[in-house]
Length: 162
Image 1: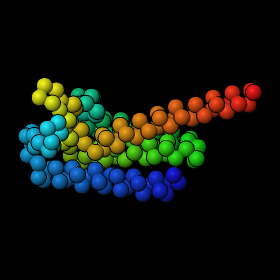
Image 2 (image 1 turned 90 degrees about the vertical axis):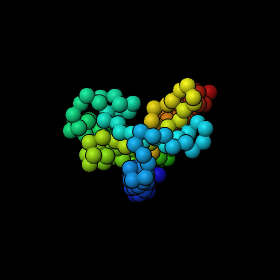
Image 3 (image 1 turned 90 degrees about the horizontal axis):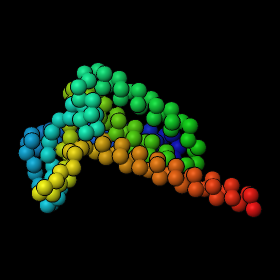
Image 4 (image 1 turned 180 degrees about the vertical axis):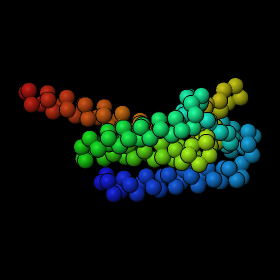
């Protein structure tokens, strides 16, 4: 994935995240589940921390600074990846999209809008949003591509030793 395509993908994903949150904010009742299917609901809530409300005790600007540092680090890591490793580039674009989507909420609102809930009658997963999904999927893709790359390097090294 070239940088231009990566930038376009980031813009589209951040826009989708922000539109979803705008719709949720305008049409979904606060702290009332709206069942979609038996194990999936929309449930609008606000997250004042980062993932799973971690660091909720920090003030908003400390969380903004933390997010900017993480974004900078992820951009730096992304710049170090071989251009031929498209999966990793996709993963980094997803992670950046998610971080920026949540950063926009944090700066404009002081919290992040969450609304996706998977649950059963006796259990509920943490409530999250599209940006959180982007981060999780992106990180998984990066790890998967790293494993593939290590396997490829090991295979090439064993072939060159033979």
